[in-house]
Image (cartoon, rainbow, N blue to C red):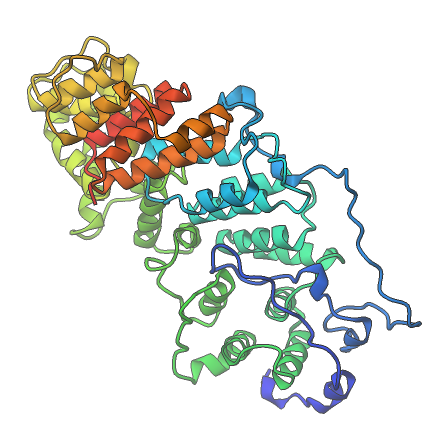
Length: 521
């Protein structure tokens, strides 16, 4: 099929003088989402739908009356309250946002770094997934829900974002479906999303998404006609024309110079570049794109690198990384292969049960994990098994550090001691007995002050008085993350906020990571 042979004249006259076929949806808070559907206000008029069935099968208008208007019930439940985790499971109050304003919450949530400490990543994930009473000004458009979804996408937590979307029921809102479509593109479920788009008359697809889905469904001719018409009417950009043309006719890609990727790559771009035999490097793309490299059709090295990125962000479970690391024997050396070899050597040593062999393999494995900032993942996988081993010397301190970095830190370090001042201080943190404990460095002093700070800044006190718990958690995470880069007073205030909220476990885990992980920028 050669697309440029299609005669445009037969379809052009049907659209002359008509309004644009599709307007673009407003830009997301994350700029890489593919515009898959339009907002209701951008749905084409009936006179725009007679493109020989390529866009829609809606009939022509038969009178001059205005179109039907979508009516929203004033008492319709707000989407902003949906969540995966009930208050009884999270320990957070049902009135999580108190009298807070949606705009303020959204701005604070958008500022959260996806590179926070693991304990704070976990806390942020819990907050986003919590079921809670919506803010008083939330309305029915789901603005806070969309902000939460976008932060999950920013964190690479696609499975969690899809599960949160599913709590809303059948996803019919364009803004929600747009995110579902992009998640599907990144996780290899695009055919299912395309079918949903086709089967849902309330969803008006954008031209690139419509053309893509027509082709995925096997209707190449209609997709080609629609592309030619859109190009003639300047409904899509020159880049989209070129990429879609190559996607529909691979022979063009074979005889042309490689297509330059856009500055901002969308998941739809990614899938079409793959289809034309010009796959893009995932390493420089946003974290969520790493999921596309977890496919079985991707090489092992790419899967390993993607799994490490996602594990580092807390977006996938530790056991998944273990599975990727142990899939096969490394066939090369250097970089990630050395890490895989160290990991596999340690796992074999642990399985042997021989303390000397374990101690010999432990140091290199920990060093390898530190180089990838995966110490906490490693601790979650192995700390509980190592505690039962009678290791001595430097290996014993390494086991204590691993235990302190695990979620079961208090139990695993019961009775443990160390001559290392930093580990001794960390043990005091794990037991909540910081008072009077020597502080070996500036970070320890900042942590200790978080337990003894006499008063918090006035704006924090006001939020506490108003019980704006969600905003306080976001503020604490932001402060501590900033403090890691050198503003140690922010570490103190952030920890003090968590403790003022009664979040003792989170504050301890955060303090332990501040002491034991090298995350100083």
